[in-house]
Length: 582
Image (tube, rainbow, N blue to C red; front, side):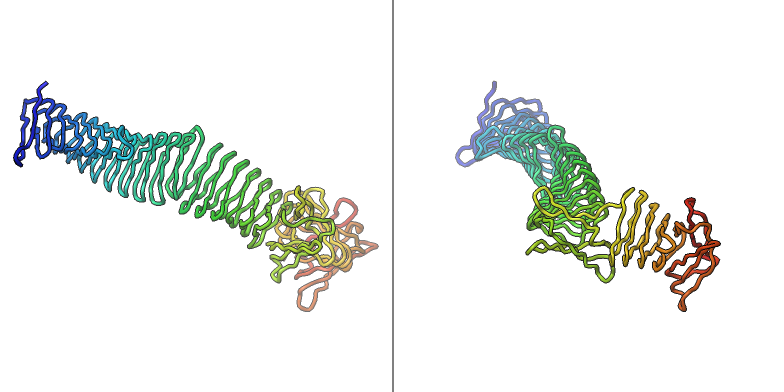
């Protein structure tokens, strides 16, 4: 092995040149001295001890530097270089550095057009790790970062990076990393405006990506983490996809948790069985769909708007939800400090509130739906009163139990006596609006009012003395029995039969008769229309029907003409009266 010592003396800088065809091995380059490797020349195992090694286009060099500078110009190559304490390498445009090891305070710079391939960062003292800085237009390929730092400046790129053992890769705005693996103890810090794709986060690895950073096609193994002000999916074992700060249309599958932190938003997320959508402070979910056994967890400061929770789905609300719909079998539990605004609870759904929870904006309570007020103790002497608003589209339900009182705003039309109270498993009060279903008899009491919603099942209804009922937009075959002095408005209801005896219908008022609705006089057979007497302003009328021996009168609200009425047998010894507008 030839050894060349390049030393400066008497303040004069010494320079040696390795020309084309020359191979120099084991050069020791001291402070103030320079070795130049020209095109076709080769310097092998040079030792930089404060001096400089310059590799020009077509030249090749390998060196160990603990206090010197390796400078690789355009088209020059550095192979197997080792940079340690105080060692520095500069890779210029179209130059390459292959198999470089940088440790214990060594540093490398890759400039526009330069490429560092197979670099190893680490192996030295933890207090002074090795560093590779990739500037605008530079590339780092296949870098192994362990106990070191890879810094990508604006316009720099990295591919095939492996990060482990306390090492960090930092991506500034405008940089790109592709195919990164973050192993145990490794961290990738992606700033706003930077982009990573094809990332694998292994157990113990972490990806930090604030709002504005783009991360796609990221696989998270068990124990891996993404710390973010955006959105993260953690899926034990199988991996999952992490999107940027706003995730749209994500499906959160079994065992997966989608975590939305400050500034992040999950839009149109579907939470499938055993999946979880977690909203932390400042995180938002819009129009989420929570399926059976799925969980939407809204932590303090989190916010969920819109969305549907299906049977078996659950919302745990310590933050705020607004405009959520709970389907049959779905549950939302509002904890202390949590707020549920304008919740719609369908038949079989339950909105549950504990002490310190807030229910505001009105609850739409469908037939068969429930509100569980866990902090309001139930007793058999508990009373309830529904005070209807002037618009008759909402009201306040007030519960009183001894010295305690609470109230809930309800959207829709309700009847006090039809709202049932019962105890929950912990002794709180459950409010239920009973469902109207086949075989159920709904009673409308004096001064009560009921709006019969859409249902596909045949039902019966009895309106007692002084009662008032409105049937609107119902698809059911509803049979209504009227007592004396009752009022029934058919609205746009269909397939409605108003049944009563000739005597029982006297004094009753039926409004908006028409369409498929009919009046059945059950004890008057083969009757025909005899006369119609209208009021002065044509706002109501009295219809008389009769057979050969008996007659009956029916008071109708609205405007009618005589030739619009028709009669037919009800098939049971009575007469059906129908009306078709002229």
